[in-house]
Amino acid sequence: MNNMTFYGKSLLFLGAHPDDIELGCGALLADLVGMADIFCMTFSDNKKNPDLQHLADEHYSSMHVLGLQDHQIGLGSYETRRFPDFRQEMLQEMLELRKKYQPEIVFVNTPKDIHQDHQTLTEEATRAFRGTTVLGYDVLRSSYGFFPHFLAEVSEKAVETKIAALAEYTTYAGRYYFSPDIIRATALRHGALAERPFAEGFDIIRIVGQFSKTN
Image (cartoon, rainbow, N blue to C red):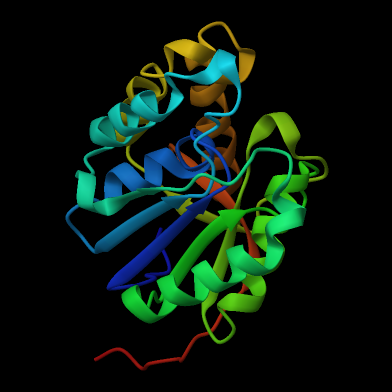
């Protein structure tokens, strides 16, 4: 079986909160490290919540497990659950990211996500990255009606790396969607849909492509 080859020299991953990117596409991210220029931007550090004071450090540790370095990780300070109030500021920040990194593929929350912060992030990303391929990842806890129409095969090693990365979130220990069994089962299900051992699934928000005849 042949996979469609998709390519991007510069890849941008956007998340509303620490853990979104890892939950949604941590395995693919682990497989891509070293294959492309990657930057991950998370817009809220959750620090206004007194119960989440260690989350920023856990996010950096999680990203390090996936193979990223500090210069590839951005963490903002927008207040959780108030993203709609800062829509214009976030759009401007995305436009600056677009100018700086010129990404060929952007990954963001699926439009099927009902969390107000996730919805705002995706809506503004769709505006900011016109003319760019945008794929929507799934965060299990807050997505309803998600079905992946773009399936990216990932390695078993990457799935295990994703599990190890999420284990860095000791603040969230015990939450069902951090369970290794759930993470592995989701990768297996998406793999089954693709008739591959493991995969991660995405919504197609926008695909910009050019057909090229192979030699």
